[in-house]
Length: 156
Image (cartoon, rainbow, N blue to C red; front, side, top):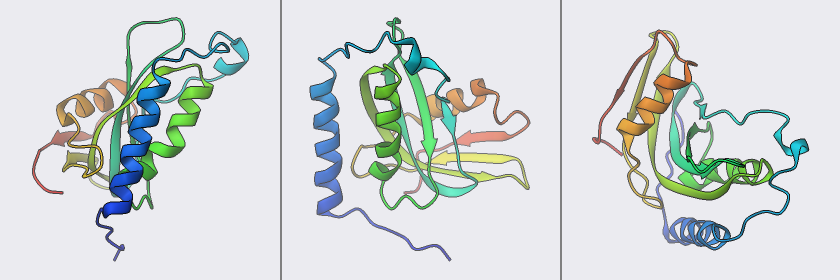
């Protein structure tokens, strides 16, 4: 049985600090954002570990484009939702993305045996993600073709 972590005051403070840093960074355009060396690979919009784990919904402006991209990432072993966001943010920044925003979180259950993905719940630190949008991003990614994907605002 996996260990269950409940958000505490420290995690809420760290999540708020992360949000504040992103807010501050959103006004600063990276001078190296046009570097072709930073664009060797495309950052996947969807990364969902098999099992039931916390996820975050993040938006960011790609280099040389004013249309935000949406990222749905879950992470095995993440104690808190910020632990899912923290590794992705520097990857986006190094890729030249700007205006990075954590739009909320929840949980994603992925079962490869039954080809199902369920998106639900909320994040104490970042609020409830738009699960309908998360479902749309997962479906459009094509990574989980043949999976039954559903969402609900129920549960934690």
